[in-house]
Length: 324
Image 1 (spheres, rainbow, N blue to C red):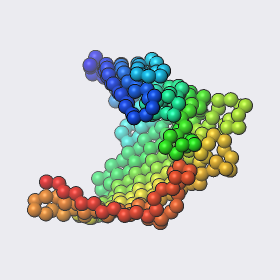
Image 2: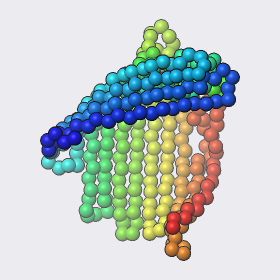
Image 3: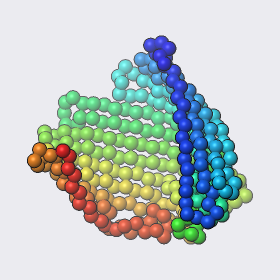
């Protein structure tokens, strides 16, 4: 609803029902009723944009057997501001404060070997400060350039994590009482045009320090939480020449630990992959036909995303798509 030319308000209500069935002895057969109510407002001026919202989450679990997770209700506010400090629209500074609430999934709670897992909902307070710069060039080889950077701090209570357990088919899901996350994201994108040749390149980098700060009495205090790399990033490149396309990607994930204790026996090595694809678009019998070939893990690197679960080596895929 538009109150004035610069002030809008909105109200939304969503209802969702989920049910899980399984052929498991003494299974709970849970049903979850979720109601989300959101009240939002926006104030928009020439150089300043302010948004606020309040979301009420109501979750009610029922089971046919065993003990349900019960009823949960949480209010989650969000405040966002975006400021254009100069006359040009290319550069903006943005910031937000957000509280989030996440219920454990059915798999977390009920698909277990012990009737039901006692996992608490996860809640977080998030702070973010970032900037964006997007510039479109009408002349020259460079047609567009963008730069985005964010620094953030999160405080998470009862963080839900899953790590491999004794049963390879059933991971161990647990809460980490308090987690402190400090991080930064950087994203750079560019587009180039050299006559009929169009080029695109992008780079992403994430630094994230996510540590357990529940209690100083345990060995995991102030250590990185399981399977969370401190450094990760990617490099993307694309080229288009008439009907021919080429894409290349490099993905890097830094060292991690597979348990809360950051000791050598739990160390998981960093990994990276190179992937490349070629495509050709042809018109056959008034239909668009796209031929494609992909080579994933080009250098055939051995790596584990999860410890002791090796990922595929070099692989190939041919694709053929018809659009008519």
